Amino acid sequence: MPRPSAQGPTIAELCKKFIEDYSKKRNKPSTQEGYQGVIDRCIIPLLGRKKVLDVKRPDIAGLMEKLSYKPTEANKAFGVLRKMFTDIAHSGVPTKGGMKLTGHKTVAMLKHYIHTEDKPVRDAAELAASRRQAITGAGQRQSQETTA
View 1 (cartoon, rainbow, N blue to C red):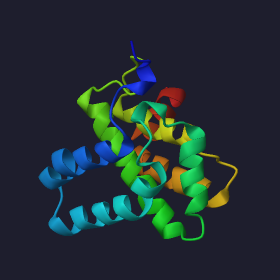
View 2: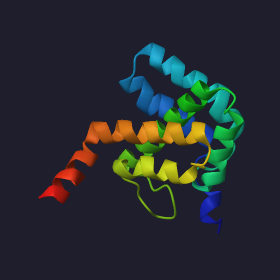
View 3: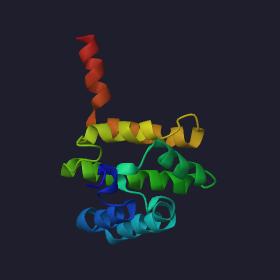
View 4: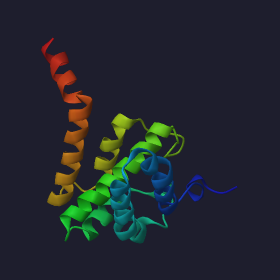
């Protein structure tokens, strides 16, 4: 019987599924092309052969480190990865040993995978977290609960 980490899709397969099942249904053609470009330039060459279940913090940190010489591209790659993992979370597909992620845990999970000591990476993670917080209003609810 194969180990659980030997099963499941690769990052390359996840990227293809993301474009087909998510991006083509929700995004304009120019956005789809942008996502595909980032996937082709950054994600597939560096992570494409890894199984989704085997992606760990050092893998994401390594991707960000290798792209640190072009911070905009690093941020775009991080954003596409975040969207792909959020899409997985919303579809209910288990991503780690039977654990199902929820959308609100996705940014925290990605922040956990990266080295936050690296300023460009930390900035990208904080930007993603603050955007998520602005959308969900999570910070406002916490502050209201503490004042009540």
